[in-house]
Structure formats: C-alpha cells, structure tokens
Image 1 (cartoon, rainbow, N blue to C red):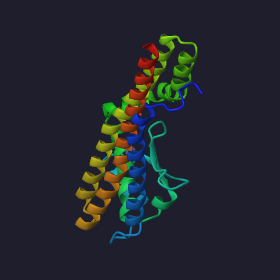
Image 2: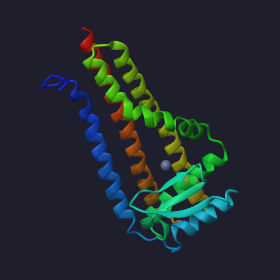
Image 3: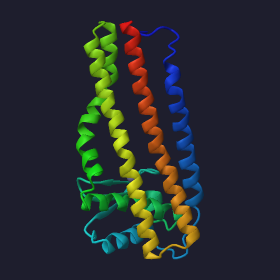
Image 4: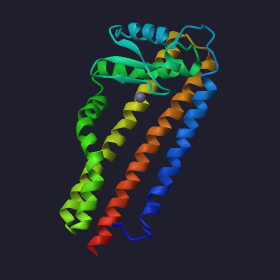
Length: 229
Ligand SMILES: [Zn+2]
C-alpha cells in the first residue's frame, strides 16, 4: 500500500459515489417506467427522429442500431445516431425522448455548437489523461518527487474539465430535443412531460460524473499537500 491504512482523504470521494449510484438508479427506474408507456401515434423512435431531423435540414444524418440498453449515442465523426435495441423500434415515451436527445447532438454538430466541438477535440487527450493520471501521481508519491504528483493532478484536471464541458453539451441536446418534440406536435402534453423526465434523469448522471471527478481531483490535491508537509 502506498497510502496509510486509513486514508481520511477517501472520505472526500464518498458523496460523489453516492450521488453517482443515486443518479444511475434514477435513470434506470425512469427509463423502465416510461419505456412501457407507448405514445398514442405509435410510430417508432427511429421513424420519428428521422422526420424531425429532416425538418431541421439534417436529413442526411444516418440512423442505425446499436447493442445494449441505454447505449444510445451520436457519433460526430460518421454523423450517425446509434439507437439502442430498446429504443430504435420502440414507440414509447422514453424511446422518443432519448432518440430526440441524440438528434439534438446531431443538430449541435450541424450548427458547429462550440462546446460540442471543444468536447470532441478533448477526447484523445482525456482518454490518455484518465488512464495515466493516477499511475503518474502514485509514482510521484513513491519516488517523493512533487513535479510528478503535479503532472498527475494536471492530467486529472483535464478529465474534470472534460466532464464540466459535457454538461452544457448534454443540457443543450435535451433542450433541442424537447423543442423538436413540442413543435412537431407528435406527443401529447403528458407524453412530453414523461420524455422530459427521462431526459432530466439522464442529465443527472452527467452532473454526478462531474461532481465525482471534481471530488477526486480535490482528493489528489489533499494527498499531494499532505506529502509536502
Ligand atoms: Zn447526450
């Protein structure tokens, strides 16, 4: 063990863990509930979202299936919406909300929404940072060399920045989704409200990720300061 048996800085990360578990449970239960409530018109999420995108002048965006549950995402490199198996063919309130959210990301790309562009640019650096931050930091502690600890903290800081930039991207995609769903008149008011609840629950998972990462960063700083005393 590199750290003392009882490491009090560990207490810092516990609120983040609890918030993360709560957000995951919330998104699963909300999805579960609204994936069983069909929309009155009965058209699949893939069909509806294809039409919404066409109306927004983004009919060229591809829509395909992907495996898993809640694995829906938009791939800006190939300009493709990948909808999960439970969403693609489904006409549920949850499916329409999720598909419209991913369409919101496609519109961000089309309009060069700056936070999406920034987020995409950061992906390669953050992938490296998230893998190397802790090993570099711990190595700095082992060899008692503060510059290495600082390098680990800076790398982890990039991870925190990334999860912060993710927040406007996600909130904005949900806002666009609700605007599209409202203006097309495809959903009743109650259905719209359900879709909004699903998207709000999903947004909370991103907030939880950010809080959790920020607390981990604080912990690294606390550990480094303790070593310097
Ligand atoms: Zn999203």
